[in-house]
Image (cartoon, rainbow, N blue to C red):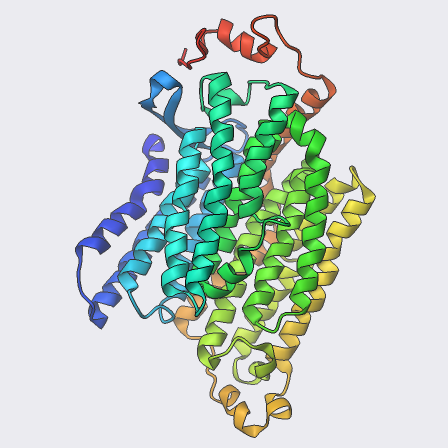
Length: 533
């Protein structure tokens, strides 16, 4: 069971894709079948991922549930997958958000329902495959594959500017990922393998680490995104359907942060330590710049989009602090942000569907007609600004504590996200939930608010689990941290040893001592090909 549990979680959504593909029909009964099939498949995948969590040994810092299949074994490349305490929760995040995205789209997606559900399930497979990949080439294949369903969802079911938004998103992310491909080829050329566990023990020269870091960072900084590679974000988030936005912003953007941790901080420690301050400064710029832009927005969805952008800066700052608290906080913030931002996009989509507008100035008085919605919206808003007792507070607090060991000013400016976020989020909440629309626009316009109905059972089924997880993470964070903290402590231990003891080189073709050691043990041949001992 353990051997096949992870592949089952990864590829079970493809079974749902097959079932949807072979069934034809455009009537309401067929669309109902498509929705329910996708939902039950995604719920089954989530159930299996929960089993994966319960069977995971948190005391083991290595990879578990591993599977290795021959692919290009003569070239040191194999289909190698597994999870550790870090990747486990990103798989859970993916499988948790996917069924909620399907439920939230129940009434919002009314055209080409089958194709939309296929795209959602394909994206789930790509994301789970990416987070479980233990081979660089396998990671790259899934990383690129995520662009196809996500771009289609933006381009087909998005807003008026959907084609431009989809094209920008695809070009930016695809072009930047080519730099990562060059870095992977350079790694394979020197090490003779793309197996990630082996590469963690290969010491590249400082100069090569710098170039490799540049290749990886261009790809990941574009997809995260970091300033100034964020030009695709406003249109992509604003124009895509909210279900797609929740998956792209809540989960897919975390693939970039996950890649930074795996392949820059862990694999290239010398370069990451040397240039980490640059990334932290860019993170501070993102925090402040995105908050200022959010102040000027009148479109509710664009406010949340720039809020998401701002929180990405906090994650980057924590990852490159090289402290256990900072990295723990960054991982926790990634998980928290994925849940909170999905909840906000779902909530705004439901409100916009009822009122026909996303303009804050055109709304008000929602609390009088939708009290349950207003209460849940308050929970999501408070979580987004880091109120104590919510998930975001724990992540941001740990990041600030970790960064204080590096720079007081970076910690101060990074922590300003709590203050800046509170301002624009509370302004949004006041205008939409409490303002009197009749006082602003007259009695005729207020009829939109008068006719509002509170959340239905299906909508509560999508939002209540998100609120529960936000409070769970905020009140009992150790249930999450204790799982990935051993892996983080191992990273911090390696980082400390690497930075205090500069890499030594052997006389054997100027290979790093660690690589020469691996050759002597039989992991590398004289021509650089990997062969399993």
